[in-house]
Image (cartoon, rainbow, N blue to C red; front, side):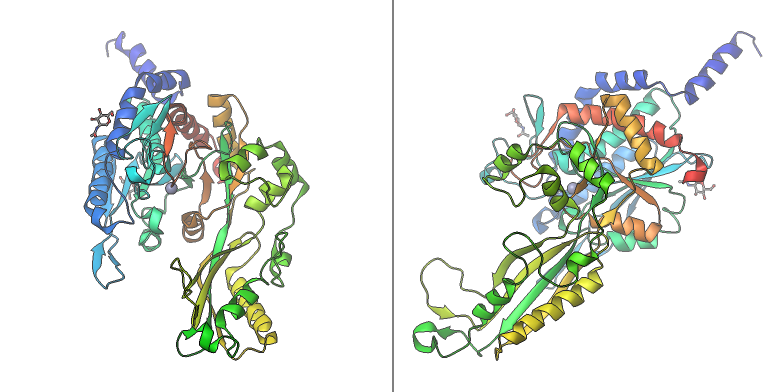
Length: 494
Ligand SMILES: *[C@@H]1O[C@H](CO)[C@@H](O)[C@H](O)[C@H]1NC(C)=O
Ligand SMILES: *[C@@H]1O[C@H](CO)[C@@H](O)[C@H](O)[C@H]1NC(C)=O
Ligand SMILES: [Zn+2]
């Protein structure tokens, strides 16, 4: 071999294995306008999963994602997950799930990135300042439906892989993607797909990464828990048909009065759940947790302003955060069957159905909660000695999810955040439910991390949703740094 070639080959080999963060970060900075253009193309596709008229757009969105990953040299599949049944009995093809794989080196860890590219509905008339499907940059913010939830985070992961490729650096870990198109309407078909591929696509996966949530403040966050949800219907049925209150009022025991009577026994005005056994099941707040909440940047006044109230259930930060994330609560959502048109019709409804839900936290168990709620409401109802009939059903029972913040996956996250943002993260939970995290955990048995890059004020699901250019670009760098940190995790600690 020509002796002059050898050193340059050695240099190439070492370049392929070393992690040059600064080069990668520079590459990202110099390509940011392309990244914004790609986000513009994705936002322009109206991939609204709740609107059946938009289903062709949703199919086009999944094809666009697959094509992008194919062009990058990934092993890509569009997985058929069947059909969806509509209320009118018709069926509609579900958007395929995109899976992809980059790298297949058995000595490396394999991460699987989950994301979704469907969006909530949006119309200019809803009160958007700009066309929701025409990405518009104003003062460093990129406004558009799905920009933050969840198109830019999915793209940021793709750009992270692209940056390694562009600089001919080996990916420090094998990277898989699972991108779906039904998240906003309950991930129809995804559970079955994960179950079916448990021993194939998911068998070599070590860690699952979800970036489908946001920070709590201007400081980056790592999310380590989400609440579950048990959703109930309580139906009270009385007379055979609706009655006129002038004619029958005073003679019948009204279903609505019964229903409101029992609903009022679920939770006290100060937020205490009155159903026996629920509070007892909740894991106690540890000193370490208390301290974590104390350290979180959170502005109570901002929070009040954002939701337009002048008083909250709790007046100090730790209590408020704890009740947002790690205690259960009861919310009453509505009553069906009640007269709800404007005006003063004097009807006594014959049958009314209340809808309420209880957010779930460790160590509550939905099966137990179902029994506790049903038994309790029947006992309260029995005391009323009403001749009406009560029926309680639980229609959703989603478990909470909680990770260990000292797991190597989280330590790697803290290190990556330190490198890119030069700060420690807020360690936070989500009050809402991301059922897919729990499914991944239960079905695959793999460890999961939630690593958001969305801002605290991105307006997910509401008007003027945005992603800041800063979060998009620095978030891409975070993902680049994170892949390297994950590669350092010792095999024994998997
Ligand atoms: C990865 O390697 C394994 C083991 O050699 C093989 O079974 C699998 O098909 C490969 N996957 C891809 C996407 O190349
Ligand atoms: C998006 O908005 C810009 C700025 O208002 C406008 O110039 C452009 O034509 C719009 N694009 C589409 C596809 O509507
Ligand atoms: Zn989302």
